[in-house]
Amino acid sequence: MSAEEGDWNFYLRTVSNSARDSNIANGPASDPSLLHAVKKLCEFCKREDKPSDDLVARVYPHLNKLFQRSVASLSQSNSSNGLLLLGILQFFLDFGEVVLHDADPSLHTFIRSCLSREFADPIVAAATLDFLYVNKNKLLISFPNLLPQFFPLILKLTAWNGGKLEKPFLKVLPGLVSPGSFLPLFPSLMDLPILVVALEKVERSSGSLVGNNIASIQKSKAPEMLLALMDEAYTGTTVGERGGDESEESSTINVADPLFLELLKDENDGLVERHWTSPGIAAVLQAAKNSPQSERLKQILNIAPRLLDAYFAIALRDANSSLICALIPILMTRISALFPDQNYMYKVRRRLLEFMLAAFHRSPDLIPLLKKPIIDRLGNAYDSTEKTELALQLCWAVGEYGGGGPTHKDAARELFESLELLLYENLSSRSETGICGRF
Image 1 (tube, rainbow, N blue to C red):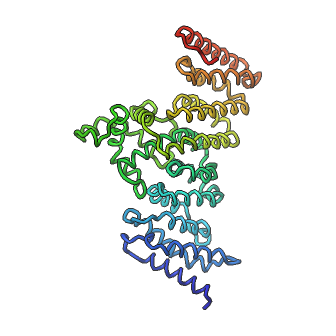
Image 2 (cartoon, helix red, strand yellow):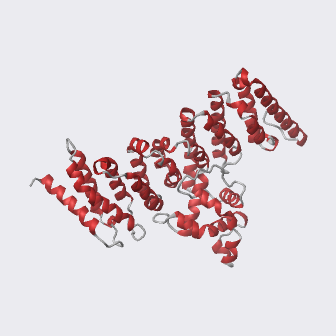
Image 3 (cartoon, rainbow, N blue to C red):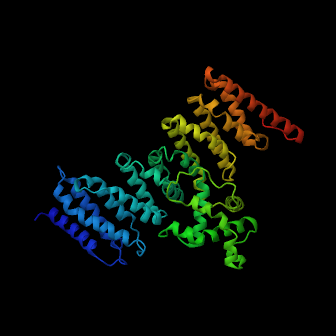
């Protein structure tokens, strides 16, 4: 028997023994040699000049059992299972057609059962993004809805692990965009700083995020976390410092639970609007404004505008006019609803205006179509410097791009006149109050 055959048999025996072990508490990931064995078996199967179906068929049953055992041990194991499961998933993707294995259920199981627990582990997070990038073509062709469905969790692991994952995430970002995720993805990128604040609050209230399922924390801890946020915002104290009746505390804040359900979700539910008028979001923003910024928050405040750049580039390149038309009113609403950091607000608002002008340059016929949403959202521009700037830019766009050509000239003229009136009212209002305008 050759040395190579001996290695093959050794690795196969290692995997087989672990797959047969019925002790759930002693999870497979606790054996550091197992991941190496899985990787070596995959290499053996790929190394053949003509990949041997026989080798693949011998390995598959053991890896399939090992995958199921690893998933079953997740709640009991103290070891990270992410790298091991990713190694097995790679085998499923590479040789699924040979063994007639549909990888879709396995991918969903990994994301929902493992990644939701281990997204805060920097090694697992980096390996996951690398796995998604290496297999992007297979995933987009065979499982086109997978990444758009779970983009909130992918954003979560990127936001939590900071700048070192920015470039890997940017490689994966195009795969997150689909007709069903295009609109919800925009506010999620805008709100990455708020997501970090919420995750840090979860960590302070419930311990390390590694190994904890956020969904279960949400169900049991959301009222207490929201109460603590509001306490920090309005009284400067925490729940632990204040004391008092816990049942009374929880009952006063249940109405705000949707905030955490929205921020900490793992899957795309298709909803675009955020709870910006809720007491919870006001508490989050006020607490963040009054508190020192963590290093993690500082990083995401720098990263998020660049992620928006990439999103807008994808939008201008790939999105149809209907999606752009639906996005612009959301953009106009959010231009005055941003995380309260001056540098961040400046960078994001500049990008929002630049994208809007680029979109109208690409499709000037959108201008008259959006006349009513534009007027509805800018009707009170005199009370917002940001909306005033937006109205000014829109006036320029209508004049520069012709408002969609001769067929739309009447609607474009009406829009221009309405915006012009808003700007004059703004100037008059500022003059009466003694405030000098920006133009």
